[in-house]
Image: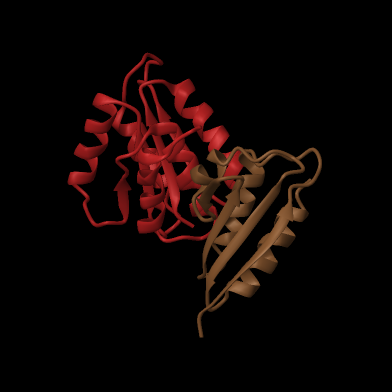
Length: 88
Length: 127
């Protein structure tokens, strides 16, 4: 049964969503079938598109809102929230 | 994993982009540079491209990105003679396409998805 859910997660201090963290986020998102959207301010990006994630321009300490839609949406959000919180 | 070949008129440009894309993709993706002529000048060397294709091919396919003009023609010419869908020339911007393709390849995606990730870079905004 398809489900849709949302979580919020803050980028850790000192970590902007630049090249390497963005790549890590995309790799994590690719493990799931769910369609995942990352929102930052009034912008949004497909979590599986590196260039879209980079264009969010999200900086350290700001909040990302993650929305997932699909059978594995809860696991996807859990995995992505852990990924973002674990950036160092 | 799908491999990536970067073809440029300049060996420094191809090598630098391979380094950048490799940093983002991690060590699992074969990213091979084929830049410049055999004598070190600017240009494209078909034998170098062929060798890079062999090095990049781990069995899951290869996506090729090329910078401009004759490097595109060289790759097209090569692939016409061995067209089987296993090696794809992406119609994509060189830097953004390569980085995007490398990261998607690092997630274990198939060759069609890696080529698409490169080509989606045509529409990507930076700001």
